Each structure stands twice: as structure tokens, then as C-alpha cells.
Amino acid sequence: MTTIGPQPKWRSWVESANSPETHFPIQNLPYGVFSLAEGGKPRVGVAIGEFVLDLSVLASEGLLSYDDKVFNQPTLNDFIALGRQAWREVRGRVAQLLHDADATLRDNAALRDRCLIPQRNVQMHLPVQVPGYTDFYSSKEHATNVGKLFRDPDNALLPNWLEIPIAYNGRASSVVVSGTPVLRPNGQIKLPDQPRPLFGPCRKLDLELEMGFIVGKETALGSSVPCDQAEDYIFGMVLLNDWSARDLQAWEYVPLGPFNAKTFATTISPWVVPFDALAPFRVAQPKQSPTPLEYLQHEGDHAFDINLQAWLRPQEAEDDTLLCQTNFRYLYWSMAQQLAHHTVSGCNVRVGDLMGSGTISGPEPGSFGSLLEITLNGREPLPLKGGGQRSFIEDGDAVRLTGWCQGDGYRVGFGNCEGRVLPARSS
Ligand code: CA
Image 1 (spheres, rainbow, N blue to C red):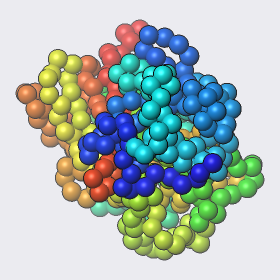
Image 2 (cartoon, rainbow, N blue to C red):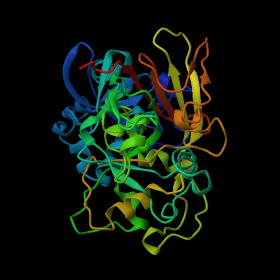
Image 3 (spheres, protein in one colour):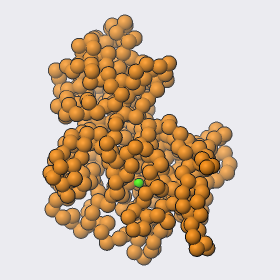
Image 4 (cartoon, rainbow, N blue to C red):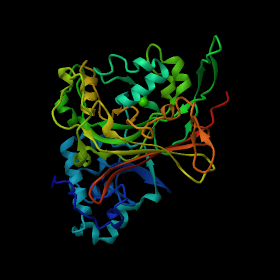
């Protein structure tokens, strides 16, 4: 079986995969879990142009060197657990089968009809069973902006921030797939002119534009991952919206960090872009000063040039409003450094663990990844296209993240990560 992945000049016989705008050309081949919209069991597929390629059918036909049981699953975990050699073999084989010169599927209409399904006819599911979710805080611009708003404008960045990839343990049970409605949380809100908190629906509901990586290889309790080997543990990446209740957060976060302000929902995109698909878009990360401690050092380039956008659309509106445009490459701490730090204590990670990047803000206005920063904690509302304005997210609003790497004539994209906010429960 070949292990050569798709090449930059390759084209597919799936015509829609050759559009310069599609997020899913042959150079991407992201994995997801889907079922037919009319019903049926969830299974593993790969996005190609406007279609999903059903890997369970390919495997049952003997076209992949793995048992179809691996792909007849409601999550990617069994496939991920096979390891990097298997990811590369399957990726290479799928690319070969979709290459415009390969006749195996191209000229077999009956098989093609069984394994190639229009995306509009499928329902996407949460792609991974997530054993643990950790959220980092790795954007210097974001940490600085939030420090100014929540604490002290003159000492926005706490002294530990430049030494530690700061993170907290999030809540895996409420990680949901794009399209899942998000219920506005209830909680404690402490108003400045009141001695005690009130209880009620969050009044400052926010998005956080993030990306997440999926851990592809477990570690043993007590062991740690060296920084220069940490990328071997990354299966792929998703878009991630770490919905945040700012008023709950401001009251509860001292001294242990956020809790209910973040636990009610975390939305991820349905397609997991393989780490190998991102290789052409590797770039240098921002210069780190001071030089990190030795266990956080790595040679070479460890950032990725991924264009990111967040959009908002009120329930009855016809237009999306662009909230921000930013880039994954702005992050101060790399994914490798995050994983090295996460395991340096001996904490083990598991296949499917989700590691959020933290809100990705850039240096310019217009590149801030949360409404907290965009509207200065609600003080300067953002005008909406088609009328109205927003300080924070209102009931009925849909928030959509999207992102892509720009290649020469193609895009390796992440699709959409979307959720609509529903009113809080009244009891
Ligand atoms: Ca976050």
C-alpha cells in the first residue's frame, strides 16, 4: 500500500474538488463521522469537494488494508488508535483512489454510487469521543486584551504568562458538533452596585474563536512528551468555539479559573483536518522572549498559516456580519509546547483528547477573536450588516467560524463551525 500523500498539483476526478474555493480538495482529505440524513448508522468518511467518501464501503470492498469495522464506527477513535503509519497509509490510498488518473472508482459507477454521497444528504456527528478537553490561553494579544479589561491596564500580562503555556481543564462532556444549538446558560452574576450576586440568564454571552488539535497517541501516566517529538502525537485539527459567559466568568474565576462560564458548550467543526495536510503551511511562530525553559524548546517552524474568520447572523437576518479575521500563526505558544507542558508533570493524555488553542487574536483591530475584545466589554457595540448592533450574542444569533490554508490554486479548509443560541431555561 502506498504511503505517498496527495501532492500540490494533483487533481481529482471529483470535479467539485478542483474548485479553487472548495475547502475539500484532494490535498485535504479530512475525516469525519456521518450518517445519511434519511437515517442509518454513523460511519467514517472523508470530505472531497461537495461529497463524502464512505470509508466503510471502501474497506468492505477490500480497497483499504484495514477491516471495515474500524470505519463502521460512530467515532474516529478506533481509527486514530491504529497510529500514524495507518493514518498515512489510508490517506495515501484514499488520495490515490480520488486522483484523476485512477480508474478504480472513477470508472465503476455502481461502486461510486455506494461510496460517494453528496454532503447535502448527510448528517455530521461529533467526530471524536473526547475523553478530556483542555483549553489553553496561548494568544499573547488575547491575554493582553483580556488582562486590560478584567484586571490592570498597566500590567495586563501576568508574570507567568511568558513562561507557561497557561491552560485549564475544560469539560469534555459538553463538546458538541457544529450545528448543535447552544442554550444560554444561567448562573451567578455579580453586579458592581449590589452586595450579593443575582441568579439568572447570562447577559454577556460571547464566542471564542479557537482551533483545537486531537491527540492521536496515548501516553502512560508518569511519562512526558519531549517538545521536539510532540507533533507526532497530533492526529489533526478542528475549528473550535469556546462559548463563554463573561458575566459568570468575571465573578467565578478567582482563584481557580473559569468553571460554569465555559462548561455549558464547546462547539467543534465536523471535519478533522489531518496534521499531514497542514505540512505545506508551516511557518515560524512569533519570537519568544524570554527563551522558554529547556523542556519547552524546539527547533524549526511550529506555527501554521491558517486564515480564520468569525461571522454572526441574527435569527431573521439575511446577512452575515464579519466579526473578525485572524490567523492561527499569531499564537505565541505552539501545539508542541502545549503538549510538552501538559505532560511534563506526568499527566497522561489519551486518544481523542481535545486541546483548545485559546482565543486567537491578532495585533490589529478587526483581528480580535471574541466580542469581549471587539466591543471592549460591551462599551462599543459592533454595527450589524442590515441594521442593529451587538455588544454580546443575543438569543437566536448564529455564530459561524471558518478557516482555511491558502495553497497555490487550492485551499485546505476546515469547513464551518456553527451554533445558534437558544434562550435560557426559565426554571
Ligand atoms: Ca478559551
